[in-house]
Image (cartoon, rainbow, N blue to C red; front, side, top):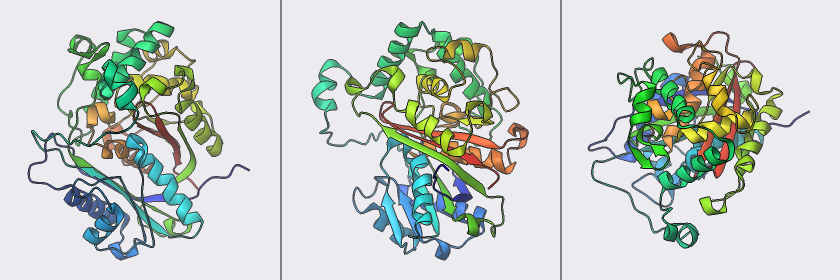
Length: 386
């Protein structure tokens, strides 16, 4: 038998993303997200005995679990900081389940939030190898780094700008059915994406997430306690994680990026393959990130995602539902909480609460997270049945 952490998601809370958060604090956004998750689960804060948070909460760079615990008025017997960039949300879920399984706690809140104030760009003293090997050659940010990876895919496999643009098109189309999405009422056509400005060649503006403010929380508990909760539990069926590098100059070959391990590992733990997945809730900070994940799942061959996206549909009633909430390209990316949105959409779908975007007969969802430049990756398989 394949060993996997056992746990269930019983509560979700998510704030509607906004472009800017005037007068808000990150701690306040965290508290709002947790309140929504507690109400969804039918729990009080006194029933929370575990806490997982991101590496910073805006107001405090250190002692983050203690600061958040104090602010929330809880006293966890297990707490930790998870630092995996955009993979943090997914990484929290399996860590919470593992802590529950070994008896460290029973019910864990996993929360991420971020304020975004106009004119304020957070800066940190970056001392990692990027400063030595990448920045001197112009690779000083995410746009440039992801542009290099997209260019590599185009040069190696002949993928076209239109292939990548189709991913953004479906995200924006799906966002039109999600009232919470920041682009809910802003439709775009494929030509709009292809005509949007080049930001870092070959990346165009509408292939890149727009930073915003928001927050999200999920509550994970034991499978036993999950049976007593008011809403349908969503069970963790499999998980995979891998890190290969930090700086893009140190990245392995494009067919050996860490998703080629983490996604198959999660599917293996769940005892399914890519064709068994009913919802692809894939991290999508850039269109190229989705491209390499589609190839890692095994539903299309290496280098052939372009043929795949041209021949399939990706809305809730399509043959491969993909990011039915709009993904971060359509829903919005509230820093690390953007990755949590993929988990929350999977829970909504598996509960049957998707409304106009509900997938029929959904049994399994694949959720992924990606940090740095396709560096830190996590994959989860969630299911509606134990």
